[in-house]
Length: 300
Length: 269
Image (tube, rainbow over all chains, first blue to last red):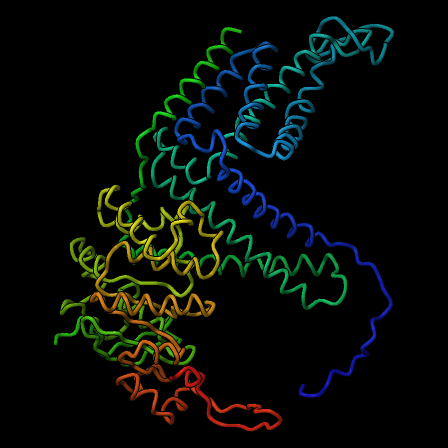
């Protein structure tokens, strides 16, 4: 081992390796860490909503989510979407990042889920886009299949409404998430009488997900640094299974250590969370403005 | 003077199989700087955790101000508060210690557990943040701190409880030179205001800088020798025996040779 290595100093012939599922999986894990950083970084920027007390923002979120659910007309939904856009811009959020997510999930959970209901088999009405024509209408189970099957105006309006409501709910939630540090959000749940023990568990879990993610990524990189070729999927699976058991044990040990750290600082099993300070004039003003916007949406 | 902490004939093993401490006894006086030194695996961290009542010895006793610190005594709420308020522990791995959402939450955790009002706890947190120069990290989650920042916050989280005794496990481990100097100066400053500082380390330069009382743990997990840092650091045979100094190869210019080497001596003035 103390002699010079005997392998040739020149590189071998180049050969491309397929990126294994392990690479992709670990990449996603690293993404979790990055996303968290983006959320934290955005919530600490100087913007309109970042300066407002989290209690006001969480109440705003709950009230507006209710409005989105109650109102069933386009002008009201449009007004809510516009308000969210203006607030997001005033809070100096990265609108591209935010709306890319909103539109993706809105498309999957709004449009794709609701789209089949626009066919006249499910939603009868005026057919605006015929798809198939049969010789005669017939009944199948609880459905009546007309001779001309197509998309109806009523159905398409229903899909558009549902997609818009999903998009509004998502954008409202992301607006609050991106402008409020996660720990503040969990603490605000105290307002809704969530038990302190539950909140502590959420906060601890959130924090340790990232430490866990980083450990997994480091472990993987350590392995990768000692690999010289592509890894067969079977070997990769076997490695993952082995590491899962090891991570479980590591987590268990860390859990014991953290509990000791809590004990050493006087924790007796009774959870005591730090409360909130008083609301400032700015918070009351923001609350009043949100209520006014909400009232305007109701009137529309 | 009555010792503030006393360990009498402590024996401990992990899972009843792996020995960690063997009949260890030592005394630490109030206001003293004290270092527990030994090579890796000699049982330093285990001893420190036993002194803090976090784990309990399989044989032997620990006393704090003449009162026994046992599992049964710590089950008494009054004694628990008395003890935790007075003895603080800084873990080697700061990630273990930083379990609250933000730096500020971390600093108020201890005082709130001790029953202080939120205003008082916050006041202490602000004071400690100013002392440690971490006001800018106030709302930062701990997983977004550097190693040095984490260590400062971990120490701060204990200082807000204003303990009489500070137990620090490998305090300078993994820190850059600037952070190390900051930490050493902080320990000296805290000792000047009357706090008892107990560290465990294998870094002899730190022992030299602290100029403290020392207990040396051997690789057999027992106390090899106690004395002042000057006496201990001068005993090279003993340090070699317990694996704290070593003989290794050096190059001086073009010449290479082997000799006994303890890195701390380079820093002596």
